[in-house]
Amino acid sequence: MESGIFFTDYRADMALRRKPAQQVRLGLFIALLLIFPFVASPYGLTLANQIGIATIGAIGLNILVGYTGQISLGQGAFMAVGAYTSGILAARLGVPFWLSIPIACLVTAGVGVIFGLPSLRLKGLYLAMATLAAQEIVEWVITHWTSLTGGTEALVVPAPTLLGARVNTDFRFYWIILLAAGFTALFTANLFRSRVGRAFVAIRDQDIAAEVIGVNIFFYKLLAFATSSFFVGLAGALTAHYRSIISWERFTIEVSILYLAMIIIGGLGTINGSFFGAAFMILLPAFINNVGRTLRDVAPLVATLLPAVQQGVFGAVLIFFLIVEPEGLAKLWRNIKDYFYVWPFSY
Image (cartoon, rainbow, N blue to C red; front, side, top):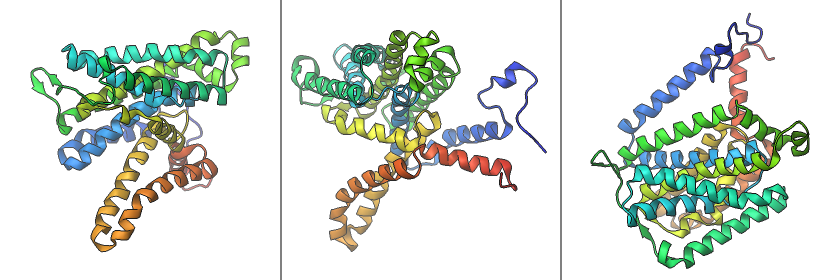
């Protein structure tokens, strides 16, 4: 009977997937992602693209909140910076989308560092209020700097092209989102196996103790904001080119709360939790909307109440996970894996 996990070389010990079952699951998941766009309906592809972008943004927020313990309510603002930077570069300067996206990520990282400066003196609720101020400041700049952003008018982004072919369809853009999400997940998984990632976790667990053992709190807190904002900006830039129309209404405080709910429901400090939370929060409203369309002819009164029901379900699910399973869907998935790992024994 197997008792523990043992390795005979460092390569096996440092592998991302160290057990055969983990490698098989990862292979099946990748195969599913590669096959999915060929068999999915247009509506299914749209949902998959939304989940992919949301996963990138959730991982970015999880780097800051889940791994480093720096709460943020400015997710929508940082996504807006990435979206508008990439959109303006593409629409007004003719920069190709494959170049405008990394530039937008770097600009967003710089903005994240600026708004991360209060984290050097603030924590908890006070830091949350500082990031909330960032949300309001960015919204004000977008809506009032009309010469640059267009103000409250929507900014139209030209269709992205790659190697002379337009990639503005759900099927073609799926592969761009898939590569971006895969890069984000792989980078984050390796980040927290490094010295930098361990410094982030040390700050989360106890920043004073981390400083005592030699962690540069000033540097690593700002680096956490920069890294998180980089990937949040990536999600915003992909949203701009995928939707082809940018409006400040897509990046309000409600978006910040939605992404915070994603990582809470999915699981703080986990990469698969970011994916679970993004999928759950994208598919739940879609399910409720489909139920509303089904009941529109049968029970029109019930169908009219569903938008309010959707908001109620959102709050109820969030409270449920905070009370029943604070570690989120990632913990439930871990319990399932542990059950089959020790089956047929109960311990």
